[in-house]
Image 1 (cartoon, helix red, strand yellow):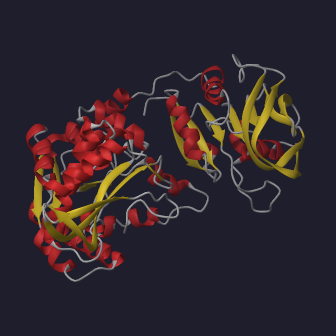
Image 2: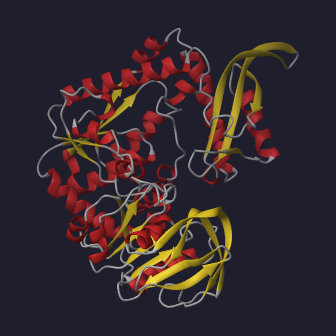
Length: 513
């Protein structure tokens, strides 16, 4: 990358990714590094500044994480956040003590000297704290520029060394003016330009893909989801017909999904898309299986087998492309390291046999999810792909409760298509995290016309979430739920009852299986 880079050294904070994301929101490129990364490597990467993240450890604890002390001699600005401030103080001659009370939550920041870091901000700010230690004595050459009710040293600086430390978290929404503080560090102190954009990323990525791939072939498992779709569009823009996409129709897809994917990528984008129609094989192996974990394993293993057979028919290729995102990569630079890095070095991707050796091509590994969506829009992918809701890997296999059959899947597909249509019509689809139907393995008594019925139940699930770690059910307007229920019961043969799931996560999960 030709852009200036801010290095974020990760000490295990739950907010490390948020720091990196906030920097990118300021149109500056950020990269998360393992806290042990050498000053020599950072110098080689020509970083414009370094941020030391927070972390769960105490600098007073033996064996707690420490950065290379030579980072303070690189001559580039350093900003320590929370644990990062304590590291700066501890390593440069200050004194850190255990606090009598852990400071967590909101605090009132009183700015004594605005300088470059607090330029343009009011003298008092509500900030978010999360720490158990406190700075008791400043290192030589440092001065205090802000305090809170529980800390005389809430913000410190050595202007000569251009080293800053703050005891609070500017990256979280709870801190007033937090993004302004980070922007001041980036612009006023590090001298970074606002030159990080998706258009630049596309251009640089295309150059990188072409140099990496050369004249070799690239294979990509296309699911139709956001990540694989954007990866396919980007790689295709770079190497064209050298990319071959494999779409596995496992018989567990939504209504007309195979046709939609083929139409979009094969006809509209002129990609080489090979379809592996293997629904019968999947359903045969799933016959009589009702345990959710067994279903998942059968679907996963069969997918690998079908994908492997497809690759044999396609012929030799050097690269296997994946839509790996930055949050997946972050684990490899976390405190404890990442076993997945070993798996990747053995090319044992997605459970493929080790004998099938590929070089990985992961063009999205520098991006967060919302950046991938922005990239998809930049590449000209339609909104219905870029903002598509998450869909489970096992597909409808985990939305048919109990044993799976073609007839149950057909009922579920039709019901789910009606829900999707009504969510789009009511302009709710893009406002929620997920909306889908579930086929329940129970039958209930109903009345249609003058006749008694004994038919199936469909559950509707609509949730809102930011990261799928927690979720709450959406208060969908009654008139929308009424239309969904009426249409499913009237238009889908075999259903006489619709129920709405009002469970949050936790304790329930988003998917039912």
